[in-house]
Every structure is written in structure tokens, then in C-alpha cells.
Length: 163
Image (cartoon, rainbow, N blue to C red):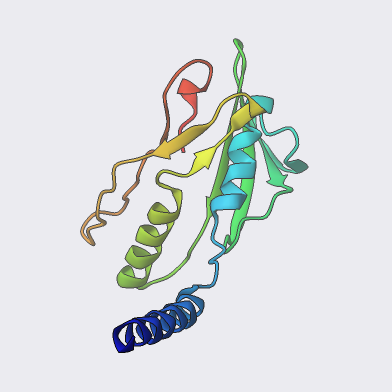
């Protein structure tokens, strides 16, 4: 009889301990740029037509527009239409950080990569894809470092989309 009471007390105590511990382990949801980038990538098949705002600059072969979609932490956002005889090509760009500190820029670059790599997107509402890119660590001697994200699986008509 004593053995079953000890077992019952042990199980009850363990249950309460793990129940309280579970409540303490919940982490707050971090809102990054993932949802913002999803909106932009998902409007790619429409040539960003749902995001194009007022015209900012008009050149001979391109027109730059303000983007109506905000991106968390972005300093500047624009959409550019590049015109040619064959067709129009659209690009979207944002400036995420301006700083003199290489270490700060390197941390931001890594953070953005982490948020975007393997991000699930659904351009055109047809099929789900993941952004995939190979991280390259920034080096202070280089003036520019980039990661090119492609959609996985890379099939028609989304094979041309690069982020």
C-alpha cells in the first residue's frame, strides 16, 4: 500500500512540475520580415501590380514607383519597371540598414538570411515554394555581399524569381 501511495505522489508532483514548466517555456512570437516578404513574393506573378504606388522617377528605360507594402525595419522600398522592346521586367528592392559599423551590418545580414531562408511562399496562390539560398559570410574587405534566394522547387513559371 505504501509503494502505490509513493508512486501516486511522485506522478502527481511530476505532472504539476512539468505542467508549470511548460507554461514557462513558451516564447514570444518574433515578428520579422517573413510575412512582409511573403506578400511581396506572392504578388510577383502580377508584376507587383497590387503593390505599385505613386511614380517616383521616370527614366528612358525604367520607371521607379513607391511600394504600397511596408516591410518591417525597411528604410526605403521601391518597385522598378524596366522597359524593353520585348517586354517589361519588374523588380522590387528595399534598403534594410544604413550604418558605418561593419559588425552591425554583418549581424543584420545574418538575421535577414535566417528569416528568409526556407521561408514558405505561395506566389499566385497555385503552389507552395520555399526560398532557398546559400549563406556567404560578409568580409569587410569586400564592398558587397549577397545571397540569391531561388524558389524550391524551381519550376515554371516561377524559375525566374530571384530574391
